[in-house]
Length: 377
Ligand code: TRH
Image 1 (cartoon, protein in one colour):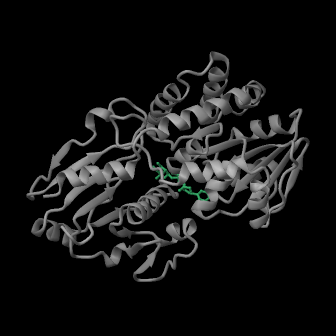
Image 2: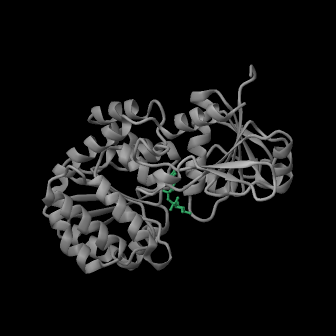
Image 3: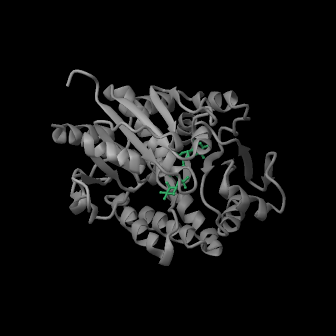
């Protein structure tokens, strides 16, 4: 096949930014690092434009960062060589008919999970109930037996270079029009879903023995901050040792620099969660809530995997705070914070080890490329 491979990614934005975030990152990487002709067919350009400010949410079709972005209502009717349904986003009927004409490698990209069972389902075929087509399940994950994690080729080197320069974070914040924190402050980024437990966290931080600087991007948790403060967080707010800094929703690549510059990152969902791991800094994950607390099993699976090899005291401090934060228990969060703060130096070393171990595994885009190659006739 002399012409470059053509890849189409279908993305349906359920809510929030994760679906678009993962698909935009993957699409850019497949184009930039693998030289594929990539089309991203998405049903919510406004959400994508939050992550990629140069994107025009009204344009019928546009090319950005080497990716052709297509609104779903203008979905193409010619099938690519490789088709990815991200998180089960179905392809339109007309496109399915085109796939029957020229059967592509058809992949269902699943949500990330640290649970062991995914290894048994990874790369399993699923014959279409009525058409001569087969779809393949592809599970991102944390082990060699999974599809791996999204990680751009330059990511670790770029992070290392940023974290090696003492003034880089202050320079980045200055570039965003933000006042850098005091040098001795503990720098925290706060991204999450609404959480009543935040009142407990703010109380603990305001009584901290050292200054705490907390950046709060625009987003759902801002509401919890404002109800705790009893007023909008439109300007810098001080509560005892705590400085709360409202920041805008950043472009996806700038968000990485916020994570790289902070000493601790509160993250959520899937994509910010993975980026916080690549930042090699301690993290607190607010998992996407599911019915009947099903998300707590996923959370526990990750916490078991993440804390492997870490001494019991810092591990218990981290696991306990994760549990209290994800169960929205404010009093417990407040009570557990001092122990967690004391564990930060060991958690920081561990975060570097964990990121290094993950970086030794092949990344998701590379594994998708190899898989597709093995299936392409
Ligand atoms: O937005 P999310 O809660 O997305 C969720 C999850 O993906 C979840 O798995 C899925 O089931 C649900 O959507 C439907 O969290 P996530 O995955 O971290 O995505 C947030 C994206 O926003 C991520 O790509 C990082 C990006 N981001 C920025 O680009 N700038 C910012 O300032 C911030 C705070 C985030």
